[in-house]
Length: 587
Image (cartoon, rainbow, N blue to C red; front, side, top):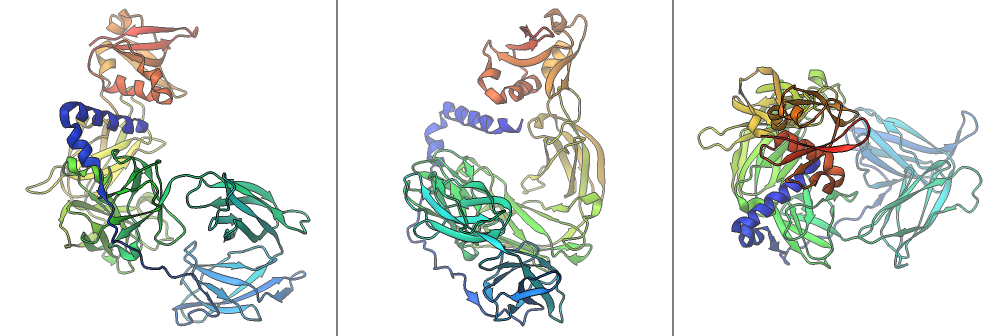
């Protein structure tokens, strides 16, 4: 029923408007105008160096040669360009040129370093090395002949598209001012993809096998779309990392999600046509229809700092999330979800920056050992939730040490309220009422795909209510104790009022709702409902809303049967002969 969330949110919005809150609500939803004084400093261009930083803890002695005959090494490739990824697939560093012997000494990440190598006439390669501190590690690279792939990128108006990112196998390039591009790729079958700001992306299959003396030509024609580059003033490098953002109509609280690009710190949003609002991190800004860049202002915000420990030791591979607890109607323009994320450093310390005024809940997540170790506790991450803390503007809140493992836990199963079968991928919520002046503490999970099980850990002690997100009134109250996991909790996706009142049961067959049993003498039996009939829709007050909702019709029928407790519901069922009939229900 996850696809019903947006329609239900819009329905609630309509109710508010009809309740006489229309003018005030629309005024609240409209974000602030952009601040024209915010500008971005010029960003450094990637540069080509002739040597690496040999003072780093780990060093690679890279030697690039062409493939030779048999096991014999070929000639050096002095035209090669080397880039190092810091980590197994980390962002490559600045380019390094090799000497006449194809060699370069380069600083590398200890434990895992990906070496990206390109050269004219050869297929690109990116082998992984695992250097250790101390003696430089030899890194021999062998290049094999490649094929030149080239072409042009233009718009549907036949105008060149400069600056587009073209990817061919392991090779990447950008389009020139006239839209042309060219790379050397592997002599094999693969994909050519192109992405350009302000356009829909595209890709095609290329086949580099065989003889291609003039190379392979691949041209693209891209369709324009409304996009914005978004930056966040007051955050490091003006980057909006670690927060979900949306680009919406000025009077809508929901829209398309924005995404990070390959440019460090850059975020791009796909927007509706015309004037739009960018919402994220608790800020919102109004953007003109012809603008290509937007700024969210976090210059006067607060932050939360702390340290994460696992078994008493710093957690070097942890992530900390902060979520703001909504306070009032005025929070609508901030977006439906106001969150921030940050990674821990080697000492387990973290900083959640750019936090708007309000109550923030912090959740730390990690696992024992190094990042490449098998996760402890059955493959699950360790998690710890803190009670919400008040953050004020220009204030730093230190939450101290977050100890993992710790807190209490909840384990159980989610069952379908209509069929009694385990329900997979269903949202589970647990909440703890605030003590004294505290705000409510919230924890979320999703039931497993195979058995409908859920597990929430690292909870502060106290009285918690556990329920399916769409059936909070059926919550189960549990007392959480430090170091104790409460098991055997059974929650349902709905209370199935229609089934209980009318005396019939449903099951699922091949994804369809089927009548499993009908109690003799019940209202359902009197209405003619029979076992084996398939539920294909519901009527509310005589209106066939299931069909009107298209592909969401089946989920809508489930929602009505599980949650509706008023009059006017009629089942539409299909019998073994394929005929359909209406079966009215009673309350």
